[in-house]
Image (cartoon, rainbow, N blue to C red; front, side):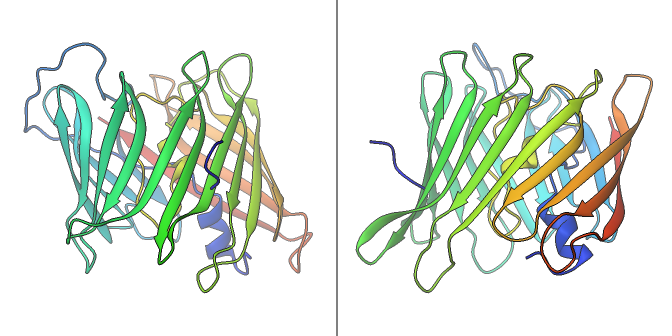
Length: 278
């Protein structure tokens, strides 16, 4: 049996629809891996979200293309990444009061389990990953450690189009007394372009938690021009337009959002995201 696992202002709305990030490239560590490796296909230098801490994500690469460091929200969190034979083994937060680390375990070349470990060496959270026969990620299930043991806290499930692009992502956060109520959010991704995706790594990143970095997981190949949010809380539709560089990579994403439920139903707001690449 598988383990289970309001947006009141424009600022918060921008965060809940956040799904793009920035990366930058530097010259340092060298790796000589065997077989498949945790290299990202697209090297973004930066992503700047309008009216949010800038850059929102920042990544540093080694000479041979591996991410060795990344930061979030203008350095609010900063991480160092360790590899073994080209696969991520540990992601460690180096700033703030809680310098936790994420320890990766594999089944073959696929991440199967990630343990969240505090400075005392205690596992306080863990997540389990599952894939379909085509190797596509179909679920991530988080559990948190409580007094009585581990309890399901959040599940992400994924459904794909025939072309391999993500069609739907369902985010189910389970009620945990004293921590958070139940919340179900469903995002559908429509009308993809034919250009190179600005990358979709942050789709699974809740801004109040550490990001699970999965370089070989490809949730999107192209860029969705429409996203529909449904579920509990305020719902909305977002239409996106893109500007591209000579390599068919997005350099600007402009969003036009319309709230479809809640106290702001019928209200529109716009936002922009800028991308640069190495």
